[in-house]
Amino acid sequence: MTLCPVDRRWNDIANAMSVLWIKITLAYPLDGDGLPAVQKWLKASGSKVIDVEVDLCYPALSEPGKENWVPPADFLRGVIAELRGSEHRWRSISVLFDIWSPTEKLLGAWVTLSLPALESISFAWFPVSFLH
Image (cartoon, rainbow, N blue to C red; front, side, top):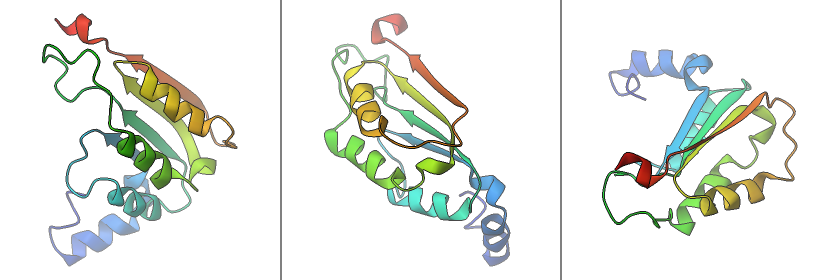
């Protein structure tokens, strides 16, 4: 994404190199274009397998009193909706979380999917108390 706005030539080069677009990271809050950028990423990656990372941790984990923070439901629905249709290309899924409930909702939406390219699933738990 950084190369695209340099000039038209850099934009064309970046968009022509599908390998540059194979890792999709979604974190709350989404910066810039947010969820709509996922469609650009999916299109630019062509038919290549992709790595999907979803960060469900509170954006400022060290902030006291946020132990029970949950990503907004519209963020989770957006992640699920934007990635729908690309599941057959997922090589890896990585979920970062500090509480279980949003992760459970995400997995619940994905449990019946056909994932023929999937090689790995990873979960990383970062409890807020760990950072204090």
